[in-house]
Image (cartoon, rainbow, N blue to C red; front, side, top):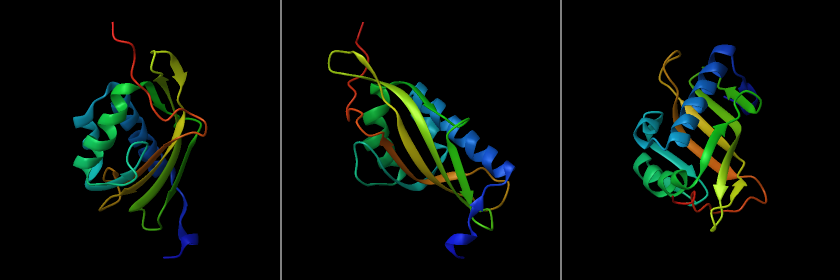
Length: 154
């Protein structure tokens, strides 16, 4: 397979990847770690704000997700206006790129806009099965503070 063989997703595959990002974004926003895991392959690997390289779903959750999700609010993948999807010719692999928004908090609890982007690589055994993510690269937009300290405690 050549790189040129990849193409824009069918409407069905695009809708499925959109639904995947919408579901994961809802889990991030609600800080729901267990249901978020069901969207990923156990051998998933990733890059992110806190870890240069994370191998395996357990490490991804413990060393990346749990370091970030509790410290932010209002997480939302912009799947309606900022999603790109390409698929392999056999429709068993896909790549999705999406922008997102969230709210961060400085050391004093003051809110700041915390936008970023995610790349996801997906796989499935047969067409029609749900996509499982095998790789994510989640990063902040340029100039956004690297750390959020969580909302002020009441």
